[in-house]
Length: 276
Image (cartoon, rainbow, N blue to C red):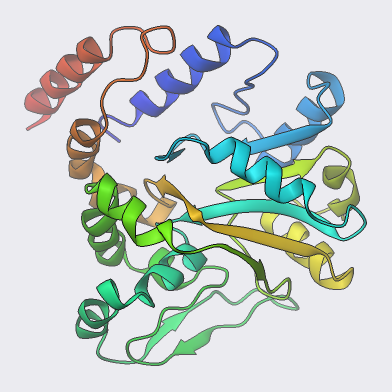
């Protein structure tokens, strides 16, 4: 995907600049993500608490990490599984945002008919029918299915950072139903969680979902800590043109973390021109 290598460059520079604190895992998808994280925890990460963050997801407000840590620390250590933030292009995050008065009517006008969500996975998931004006928050939920909805929520939130912050500022921590599959674009957890959820499968989200449901574990979403998630797999081709706009909406990070962002942007645009 043209321009997507910028995400990889961000991860590469950040991990090398913060050796021992930031780990970039599985860059070439040589193995399922679960095993990459498992290997890192066993052999490279000494920390007791770990923040997993997808390479195309990022927070937009200061104090986000402190907020996640404080919330985790407030939970019963025997019950808590992990803490997350409100991710816009994420089945639950999208569902929550479309329930806000500022976005609900517009969304209801877009999704005027019932639609299908979910995937059929024998013994685990079934297809689900979602009513008009609603958004399915579970695995392979509404926004995962429809790239045009991902574009819409990016235009309403990602490309308007201050508005996104304002929309979520009055929200707070909520418990997420462990029976529902959660898309783990971001999660703060204790290192031994990863070994507990292993069932011999390869899907980290499925194993986490089954573990949390079976053991009645607590999942907390800090809805007042907004995150952007650029795209899920089915959305990539349709959202490539948004990448330059996202870049413009967020100033270059501190130069210690990224080597010459502007050069990357210029080269990227040249490559796009050549292909067009």
